Amino acid sequence: MGMHHPRVKLRSGILLMALLLGACASGPAFDTGDVDRSLTPRSVAAGPQQAAAGRHVLWGGLILGTTNLQDRTRLEVLAYPLDASARPLDESEPQGRFMLEQAGYLDPASYAEGRRISVVGTVTGTLTGQVDESDYIYPLIEARQLHLWSRGSDGVRVGGYIGFGTGGGGDLDSGSEIGFGF
Image (cartoon, rainbow, N blue to C red; front, side, top):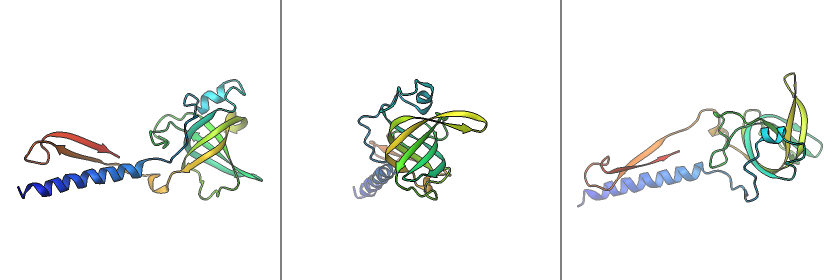
């Protein structure tokens, strides 16, 4: 009987570790109650000019540039689909580009090119700009909530998998497998 306790503690420890890692991976606490998930930057840019104005979106991607204006900051973002925690999936196919504006000053050193960002905001219209030699229509959103993803999770993707057995006596790897990915 005494031999069983270390295994139970080990399993509990692995489960606790997996839950803690899961908690670390959870995203920002965005208020997404009124977000229109059907809208993408590409669909807004292609649609009638003011069709999406006033709609709320949750978009994210990689920052391409930061411009400080007189009373606000404008970021150009290459949009990507988001995972369940609102993190941009930058291995996926891009969904177009968008501009976001945030009242006040955002430091270009923090909001630097290549950083991942997610935003809940209101579509206020479109801006016409240039991408290489072509005119480009950018959806413009007024940021309501911004989340800049930490640099530690940029670049090299940290990944892992924890599995542990449940049920059955004997070895740790007997019984059914339950896994946690992070």
